[in-house]
Image (cartoon, rainbow, N blue to C red; front, side, top):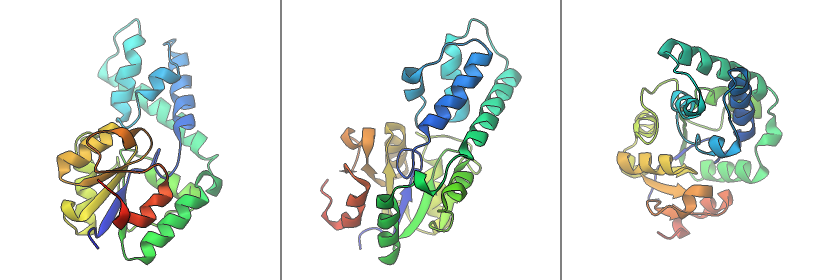
Length: 215
């Protein structure tokens, strides 16, 4: 077995919370009369909350202090967490569950490597909190992707070396983070066509055949 562990980004890989992020950012932006649409929202994928806010505020007609930005970010997160309470096990596909079960049965260590500070809440909502050996998320890192910190922490928690781990990502920032940390990567979704991706897959279930993936 070439890899001992697999580290998963969460949003866009295991589940899809884009609609909740969008609605939360939209409510926040509307309150301060800043234009926000789905095109801008797409630019926020894979980046931290504060970096996302800075992108949104480029449309603002005033400058915001750091304290004001913190308040806006907190406001968005409170809206987002309330929306997340609508998530259920139906938000995780059977394909994802079956593939995770198979990977666990084959002895792979599984971890989360997500910049989200709400990773544990989401996993609890959909009933997957016990699927992963370790969780590295926005609560234990100081630098967001494309910095590799979140993946390096996950590998450290699993007690494996980066070269023994495979990172599964859907965003270019995540693939860049994997490369920077010395990890091989699997790209799905948008990241599947990225030239820095080690392996590309169209469907999550293809992870069940890791040995057959071609570079």
